[in-house]
Image 1 (cartoon, rainbow, N blue to C red):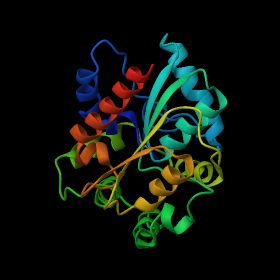
Image 2: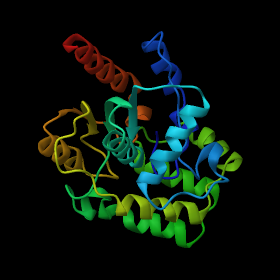
Image 3: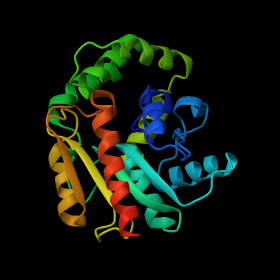
Image 4: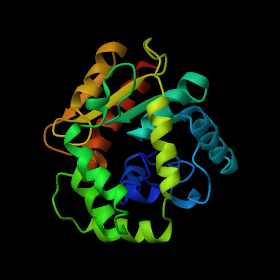
Length: 246
């Protein structure tokens, strides 16, 4: 599951690479309501409602639990809520550059240096190209990338309405994660040089939840874009350890 206004298509080649790394497993990229193939739906105002939608997608695909969830940003909140509400569904969570109340203040969950760029893009009704270029600059440390053309095509094919973007922001702002250590095994992956969300957010989660944390030395917020192999390796090693314990 991806983050705010992002669709399953934004995983790019990552899904195929991940599928190759876990042969015999079913790998399914989910869209949050209002994004991607579900852009015609109204985004829920709560993360808990997003969980219900995602569970329904897997039922429709005849995919049964237990699941291992890999999610980033807003998707990470959905994964945590999912495991909390339906513990028998989720065997493990891999959370990428996510942030949650009550562990981190708002100015770490969205770094102040980004406020002006995002407000300008929203208030001035930025063109699809200007918007996607801004998102790429804020989330990736690769610089100009061929992925911009792919993102622009996704934007034009399945645009996310401004109303749904706002509703997703509200859902993320309202969500409050459990303070107790999750019963579901959890791996945190984060980027030392994430320019959108402070690395301190994942460190706070790891400290409070006493779970494993791995920090990438130079990738941006979109870790699966900047270094997909690293993400896959960390997830695969961690999952292997879980299976060994079992």
